Amino acid sequence: MEFMARGRAEVRITHADVGKRVSVRRLTGGGPGEAAFTDAVGVLTSWDEGVLSITRRTGATVRIEESALVAAKVVPAAPARRRGPAADTRELQEVAARGWPALETARLGDWTLRASAGFTRRANSVLALGDPGLPLDAALERVRQWYGERGLPALITVPTGRADAADALADALAERGWPAEAETVVRTGALAPLADASPGSTGDAPARVALAREPDAEWLALYHRAGGAAETAAALKVLTGGPSVWFASVPGPDRHPAAIGRVVVDGRWAGFAAIEVAPAQRRRGLATRVMAALAEQALSEGASAAYLQVEADNEGARALYDRLGFADHHRYHYRRALPGSAR
Image (cartoon, rainbow, N blue to C red; front, side):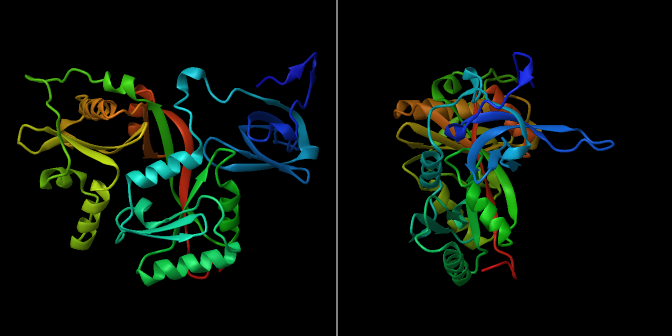
């Protein structure tokens, strides 16, 4: 990492650079067996009272005393070829919420409380965008009560990793004993290249992708995310909700689906989810073929941009989406209220 200018290190960032991606070097050690300096790259999310907060790509926040800075500079946000469609965090979070609609919602200031009989964290957590309209502790108590009345754990979705995300809320919840779980990456990409990405299928005949407005029992069997009867009923309502929803499936040799997928079209956005391939049918390009067929349908309805959400530790899926041109936009995780955590 190069910080030298005319032979000396320089701090070349100011308070005006909050919101930009920066690279910094700080003095951290120097004792026996310790490195004297540590480098960090991320978004400068705040610079208050002599302390800089830098959010890394992983969503972790690093706090640095201004007095410890040795060198710093603004760096490009990302190579141009890897940038997705322009959008802020709030837009994508709201679009994704419309595309995976909860069965029951309630407002708490700018926050939205969502419940769906326990089917997926997304549809059973608070969408925390903006001000809850109450002091935080009072808002959290209201959240606990609302979810407790429905027999659900209190979960809050917390976007991170960008200047317009909610890193400060993540820190406040951590201080109150709400642990983090299920870190997820929101990725975006252009839609048209995705529609052209379909590979040839191995075997005697090309894979045929069938599209339908509702999932049938065979589609749901491969998806296998819902549990009991109540959760399955909730799953159907969530899955079929959204502005314009399509379900894709590729028939397998036993007439059961070899691969499935879902897309929801909402204005310029096409949101992809539930991309699954039967274990015996993997490595045949079927996931790409399903996404290409869904992308083609979304293009016909006027969409131009794609988004999806993938768990941060799902390396196989992330590699597939890399090949299909998706780039990281931001991350989010959930914060869960535990018994005894601060109210």
